[in-house]
Length: 135
Image (cartoon, rainbow, N blue to C red; front, side):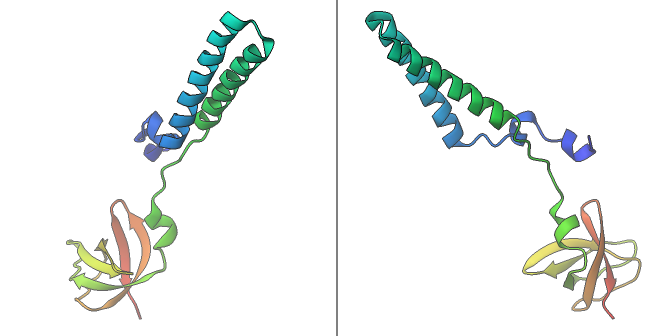
């Protein structure tokens, strides 16, 4: 388990949308309703429907519980190799700001890079993009 995975809570990992929760609640209500109808009517069809809706609700809960979302760092997979423009000067000991596709990012470099210079993203270091001057 990586450190990013530890920072995400159980319910954040599962795709419990309004639709999933609504369907589960509806299935449970229908299951209880048909169980009550069976209690007074003694028709096996109502018992079958009650059990069917309960089983479907349980299956949905199990499937949704196994649907885990692993947090990923989108900068690692999408920004390396991209070209940007320096908005705020970057110094070796002082991060600056770059713009890539209308988005602003904090950036570091081993060299001084002035504003309006083109840079290329070479890696990601925590919250910073590591860049180099584009030749």
